[in-house]
Amino acid sequence: MQFDLLIKGGRLIDPASGLDAPRDLAIADGRIAAIDAAIDAEHATRIIDARDCIVTPGLIDLHSHVYWGGTSLGVDADRLAAKSGTTTFVDAGSAGAGNFLGFRRHVIERSKVRILAYVNISFAGIFGFSQTVSVGECSDLRLCEPREVVAAVGEHADVVVGVKVRSGRHAGGTSGIAPVDLALEAADKSGMPLMAHIDEPPPGRSEVLPRLRKGDILTHCFRPFPNAPVFASGAVRPDMRLARERGVIFDIGHGMGSFDFEVAKAMLREGLAPDVISSDVHLYCVDGPAFDILVCMSKLLALGMPLVEVLRAATERPAEAIARPDLGALKVGGIGDVAVLRLVSGRFTFVDAVGASLVAEQRLVSDGIVIGGTWWPNEAAGDVSETERFEAHSHHTHVEVAARHFGHSHE
Image 1 (tube, rainbow, N blue to C red):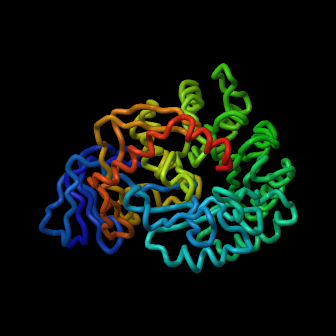
Image 2: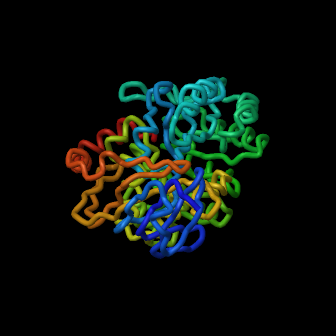
Image 3: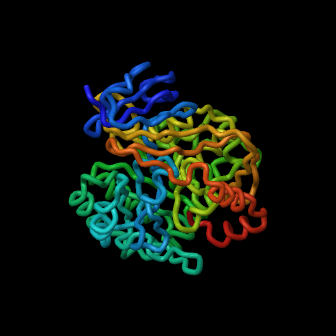
């Protein structure tokens, strides 16, 4: 058999199947055609040398904002894809029922990389989010219309994966818990999961968590005080344990203000690792502190989460969360979405959302991705200027990052 592409000599890690071994992987007609210890290079039109690399399913960023040009916070998914090892971006409610068609026609359908999306309970989506403007989309309950969401889900069922609500003082003003209840109504009627954002109270975490069902997603699960999942002592709050036992999915959703190293350490120490690692990348955190999903994954590695579990949280688990078993795995006959990553040694300083630093000896970087069988190299791989950009932004002082966090702690 003749293959279009052969990825040769890599360490293939597929958490979904439990495979972690040296393997070659061949692709033909956009699908994985063979996985074997040694595949003859003569049978391949193009060969990717993956020696010293990790070959894993294309990463799925469960929480991103990629309505580029249509919202002030959107970033260009195609520009981030190869650099971040991401073959599927899941937009977390940038668009609501009122502008979802525009998102689809002008961004989703034109993108080279796969984009799926949650529909925001707010009819207008996230419309008032910038460095100088902060208008929560759920602060006016007239915009939170479940019927419109259900209609949008039905119309765009092929790309919609759930309903999104942003609750809290920044996103909802004085609306309290009402946006969450309305979003749950829409999710229930649509037969979809809900992704719930919590920023600063009200409402408090204790109001939101009991409402979430099995398969619903709590994003910003390691967020800082207030509404943190741990007490000041570091003990995990009981409602978080109950939510995990009930099957609520814990998603990092790093973003600009929603990931705290000390909270993460406490949660990991108590055996409550995140189910999903996502970036919540948008225009105001793409240059730090989140950067992209690979940086977020590297932070969890630095905190002691095993490599295979870090990869699982960006492949198998988000695929399960969006009910897309065709994604997030490497299997013969499956979609040819692959990430070729490298675990680089050095001295790397990571910064969380409140300005705390963490020095690590390893960092994940991308050599490139395969989307639907087509190789897409990371043109910035080995680029000194790109490394310097990361290092420069990673060395923000505590005061600089904390000022940004407390001024704009929405995401």
